[in-house]
Image (cartoon, rainbow, N blue to C red):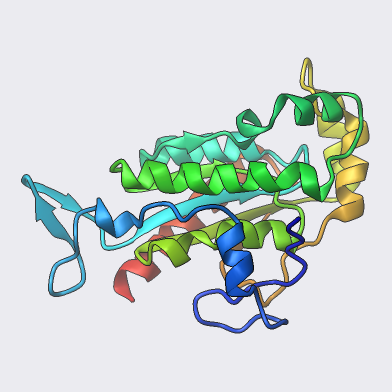
Length: 239
């Protein structure tokens, strides 16, 4: 059984532990095909290349919108997807039936419940990129560092992929109120507390994280998120 107890190194920066062993990396799942095998290559000036008259970006971004229940992941992700004209992957749709039933009954998911789900989200993101998408927007609670590290493996397979976490956060009382107002959603208000009990907010060491305070109006949240995403795109393009 995989434990993912230790963070891995990201973008060549050494994390707080020795990182994953090669055996753990292999056992996470069979390696998907590298994105470079199917995507348009970059030009000699490392910007874009042309294939069949179309231009392709040097980098392909995965924007993973994360945070506890009630933080507005779906709303923010759909806004980014529409604004950036990128495909949207709803993480909840990749949960197994057993996971959905557990959450609907107020039973928190265990680490074992989440491994296959996290791997499936990572591979679906890479599949969309390999199919020609310039980037993808993905939702996933990714409450713990080791959950985020499962997704962080994606750039190891395809070095033109850049992964970003958009961490939405607010006080527990704010999210409890929002979830309590939902109608017909399997994630009940009691699940907010259980998620906060295991939440590991991103640390300064996790430099691939954009942090957004969602205790404000949704218009302000959407505006700030898009502005920061576009800034990251500019930084990556100019690097």
